Length: 374
Image (cartoon, rainbow, N blue to C red; front, side, top):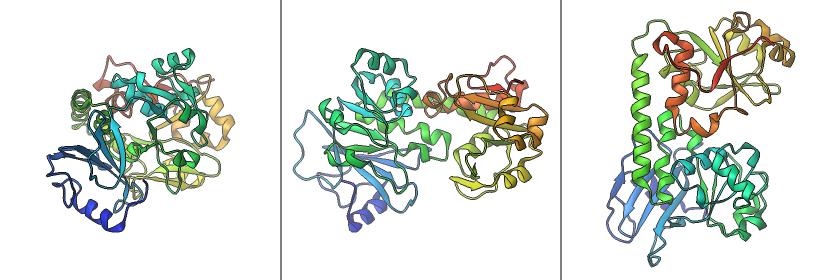
């Protein structure tokens, strides 16, 4: 159920994070306290748990409400409006490698019965399941094989929502779709905290608590390590795509990472947390003298300065190109997307090593590498 009445939505937004207001089936047993995530909230009741996901493009609206009910109990006669999910979930279809990796971290990979775009699934247990035939290849996430989704007994689809975009035929087959908007969180620990939502699907809240607590402790310790640095090198990221360079805003995930790593993000004054399309000339004008340039790519080989120049010759005008201070992350050979959403401390450690190498003298980079000559 994607549509919720305006009246119910108003009540929801007013009560989210407070004791249940105007909701049936007894008094609220309380809200789960979230420290960093702003995209969802959890409210517990005697016979069910509510998880409300906020629309990341309009935070005054609700994207979806989920009503989690234990599958061993009879469905309560009166439930609030929303998408019902019986837990623990047994047969899950996952559209992205990020969410497959999170389920793997929870020790529930055996519940995944189908995935989209398996060529991007680097989690070993997923690849093993695909090879053995236990996990079905459902094709592209934009147009999955819905007949196969039904044939394999899918109970839940986990997908990433996009603005003004639905899920096509998958919305019409009666299988609940969990709209996992974790990638829209602006704080690195906020995205990691979504594991608490995913854990509810498998009745593993304590496992999630342990994983997140360790991640939080490590991340905050690393952040403290650079808190006293006086020199903060300037940095910008990624590269031109088509006609535009999509630049992350000053309240974005990327900007927070750079700040926490003790760097001065060139575009920190750009408003918002999303990406802003800019011309190459504008980016060059702003970032030409930046100390570092970080970028990601997906290639069968390491990208070199020669490759970058061949891709677009004007790249050579950046000081970071001239001074050989470009660092690249080849996502085809390192599990970047599978790891950092749940373990932002891993990525933060890489960034600190790049910007302030003396603070981590014995650490070897996990994701990024200095760009090679050729």
